[in-house]
Length: 230
Image (tube, rainbow, N blue to C red):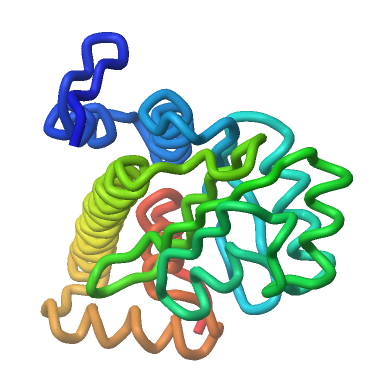
């Protein structure tokens, strides 16, 4: 694999650090698609596609070409990004002029977008599937073997960065929820002169009776110091 030279980014260790340092998931994805265009010589346009059922959306892209290409896939319910996520594989078409896998999407991609090559890589970890990294080329036979290796390494880094960011967010939410529930329990224990188990049972009863999440009920009690009616 060639040395990566992008504004001081010399290797994938630095790419990984940059992705993890992004402030949020949107920042991670935008950095990733920008890096794809810079690192992969055959790539002229890049985007991340999120496939949910029969729908596809593009939360980050280098330009409008990827958004339009993905919108066509969504409209026609076929295309490389769909196949990549559905079949859990890397999908490459070096020359869309000779492509037969997507009979409706391919002619539109050629005529409307002016692209002639596509590479789509599944973004995933052992626990989650995130979508696909889609790389468009303006010319046929643009992707070299080296490009595929770099694209696969970048897709792996994106997947790990997304997984780490989401795990941190989930832990943060869980810790906040536990804190709020504990604060609400303390208020009820003090007001009603009851123990922790009784206070928690009281909160659960309110949650079930009102069909509201427990943490929502507890947040309201902590903020207002008022007890919801059972």
